[in-house]
Length: 467
Image 1 (tube, one colour):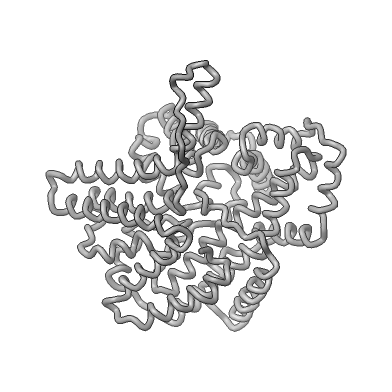
Image 2 (cartoon, one colour):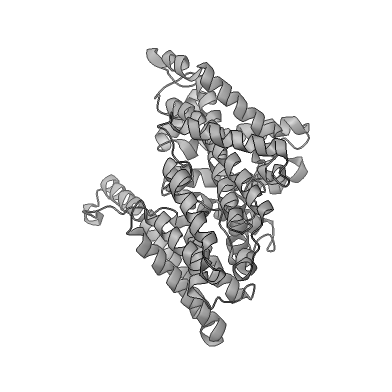
């Protein structure tokens, strides 16, 4: 079930809000947990078993850490190994078998081949809820959070449907007080509706059309340089509005339920360096990697070389977190190398002395090159696409037909609108702080237009559902 669907908008969400607000305070978390399990299990009920097992293990580990200090370290190790084991098996089993067999074929070591009669299905959102659940036991171990006594409260935290499938990654310390007590006000609910409506508009009106442009370009096989740059820029807008739109909807739903979730995006394409980009993009993941991986590795406390190595390791693993593919590993490696290079060069970085707007433009161009690896099906496809961008490709005679499709007025207007919103409009977080009458009318219009457009769009994926 996706947020931008009639099933969710006009059936699940109204029913969920009705049941939630009609229930007594003591039952709200139970109702919300049951609703979240229905939401998550809608596509495949078997996924619920994995979610429940992960939740139960971390709940028990948290209690052991709090009540049995002598076993705290063992409980933490159990939590980490269980979560990483589940994530590793379901996300990387197929990838590992494919690469092992490819290595065996290339080297002639047929004895190493594994003929597996099944493939592992990736459960929705496993990358998000395992990180979220694992951070709980880590924070309890560090003394940053108190262990939860109520299993229902903990299950509600892990499974809460607004952010279960695609984040933001909510740390327990960020909502611990809210699980104990929170307010439900008209102002908070109104801001939640505004957040949700703006996020829905981002997704339906901007991300989906830009996604069609990107798909046409990346599936073309060969294309001219202009269409190649146009296609990857459209993908940059698609992934931004798709994911930030989902985050806005998640934050909005949280507000409707009385929860305040942290900001997840902060105008990332206004960044003047790759370092700044990671301070603005997918904040819940970048700060999670910083606090639970980069800092334990030593951060920047053990000398320059160790710092550069830590940055590279974190981004390589961050790339692999996004998907079981060499493309994501290359994407992470590029970002890690750029972060290390910028830290090494400091203000003497190649674009450090350029005017601000040029630094923004150059950073965006660098990001476009890296997005090719994120979007392409494999490394060979990424290589061909980069060659087209550099005018080194060999477009076939029919490549010009692509222009007749992607330069239609509807796509051009959408692409231009996406650019205007990206570089000139305020963040939803700031815009929705106060809801005036004009803003309320704009919110209503955004929701209605988006709902109408849904009836005309067969193309409605969420990019981060596959991670």
